[in-house]
Image (cartoon, rainbow, N blue to C red; front, side):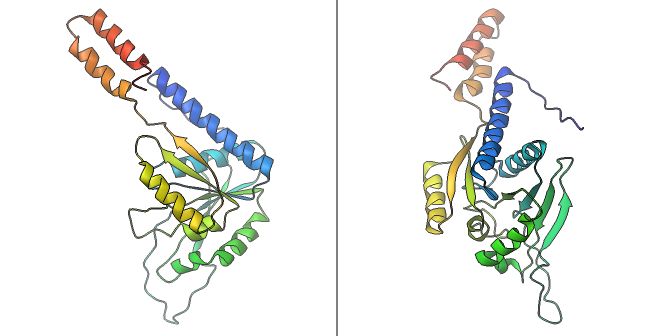
Length: 240
């Protein structure tokens, strides 16, 4: 068994990592209890930790004794030239691989310029994922962000609509209320079954954590007072 070593530099980081793992376990448990066949994860915008969370949940489910497939819809579109015949195989834009020591299979969407529009066809997607569901206990879908900042990734609506349930991952401190409202409006308009949100605060720095080094530096000539001030700033409820 491969053990992943994570460097933890403070008690606060240990708490956050533990909280993230605990949240992933709750998500996995809820999916099992509700009998969810295809569980998707998306975010209002990019860099929210969606891919990391999907792989963590997939590995937890595998360790629970289930056959898991992770479906990656976040791969950029490959702009290939049109084939000589002008046709394409609807089963072509997929690639199988194995998770890195995670024990799950990965099905990656590999859309080309010709095939990317197939992923807007919810019926086609549900049929395709249904075929994969016959060999796996549960499918975990890594979905593109609702409001992307790039044009070479898939539209989230098709893949999200093909999921039984979708969770919205929200990065703490890096997302505004208006972005969340806009993302929810888009998903609801498409009748996507959003069942909840996940707050990603793993790399979030509270105001107290940001101010603590400055407080210690200000009193650097009196080390005892500097350490006391740093500790008080970190522990302040007002600065959390």
